[in-house]
Image (cartoon, rainbow over all chains, first blue to last red):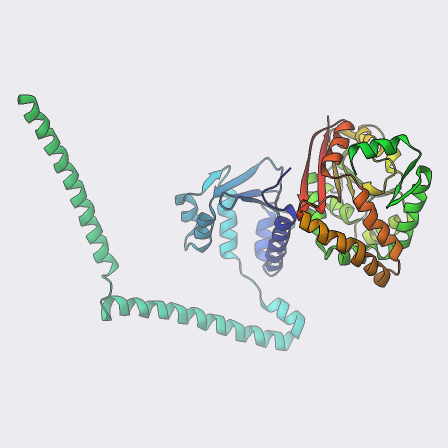
Length: 213
Length: 257
């Protein structure tokens, strides 16, 4: 029997993914508690290109088991290409992307949306492992410093995006504002419809002229 | 090893022990000697010899078992209990896992390891021969035998014994070294098996002969298709196998009709 992939390779990937996710979950006890309430939920991710399927099972302990094979019957299947899954992963609104994208969902969608909400709300406690390694004082100090760095990076990133946007629109006039673009696109759509109607009328007139001849 | 060679061997009073031909009755004692010798360092040698990949092979085998809570699992030649530990969690308090091995030394190492890992309650240890399993007919949901079948004297008899104790619909999983699918990999693998493996055995376990036997016994083991035929001959249905790591290892699955 010829498998599409060496099962050992896929197992290595799923084992690594499972270990990483569960390691992160140990830092988020709130998320684990919420996940435990979804125990026995199985989500199947069936990627068409490249052809690979993985199964995520939520355990009673609020951990995730990731495998390349499952015979669970009541599972939610999400099917699509790698591009679709990547778009979902980086989407600002994953729930909307899940519904509006080319991803095919078979089974209940509620577990998927609940899982997405848990992941969005997940608040990792980075201080715990630092305190375990460095001790209470040094660990807390380092965590505070890291929090400051992350907070500054986030603010700086938002500020940079805002200023860049202002420069492109106002100073450089490199792109028209979004509202102007919306009106422009509406006008094009309206013009397209009018052209279609005109073409239909011309065709009708041509048929009438042909009929008289 | 071809089907014809195996059948010829079954008709005779001799069998193979690695590349040596021995009396059928003697093989069990010789194999016991090997595993008595390697038991204490079995796990560390497994990790060294396979660079840890044996854990992936076993993990995939457990996935294929699809074991559910409340089921009874028989882990034959379970040795140091890698599979049993996971099955113990999967079957839960209502289920049962039987760790069986013909070798007392391996069972003792497995028992201590499982107890240290907190796996007990639904775990039972049985010292028995895979050819004559001491269990009721139709009593087991799933049987696994990982890296053990090649050491059994009469493999066909063992497969028939497993079929007898499985419940209808129950499944057998045989994880075993097999035949690499590429000629180049076969050459690399031969060099590794006959040169590096015995050397590692000498350096780590101070037992070159036992590890040379392990390499030889792998070459004597039936290849993928032959083992598939043996399972079908033992009345298993829906038989299939998955090659892993280029066919160095294969996991065969059969269902009792």
